Image (tube, rainbow, N blue to C red; front, side, top):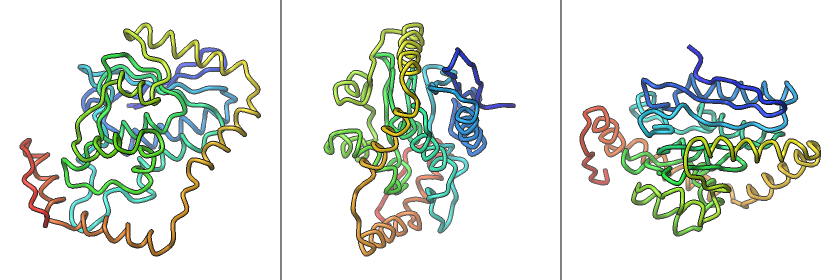
Length: 260
């Protein structure tokens, strides 16, 4: 069963993620299909991509598929995991990518939306990043996406509390480009925005996007600091708290963390 539906409207292609049984959770299979769809769009001469979802009971995406996270002493969010690969495919794509959001967005799916170049969202949408509920040390690349997109203290509150922010708040912080009333208006606004971009010079847009990506990733870091951050993450993913977070998720109960 395909997890990503494709629909062409002129030089704009819509990609709709769909896994209703798991509330559009970002499984490895779905993410790999999404990455391939982004690559295919560039090869097919598409000018603009729009990523949306078949919202399930108000959920745009439940985020990373927790059942696929490794147990034991393994980093749950390595550089080459499917989510990171999909995010890189969005950042490195030569064409603009718009996220069209209607519903709640959780965990890694919020990272995916923030990584898109532009965001159109319904007012009732919300965004949450929830690794601390599971004891997961979110990787440095993922944290940098939030720090680049949001005021630092807002990013900290989102990570430290796991509480969502509303689409209206996200618009206030400059994350959402178009705030709309309902699903129909979302599709109309995203279509209008994509079609407007598609009329512009694609080579210029490609160069400017690449420049913006390079500039926002230009955060000097010494090798010692990088190793220190990796050591801190390693301490977290090998901890009892991480194992407790996964067990509590599967047992559908609040996790009890003790810092070990």
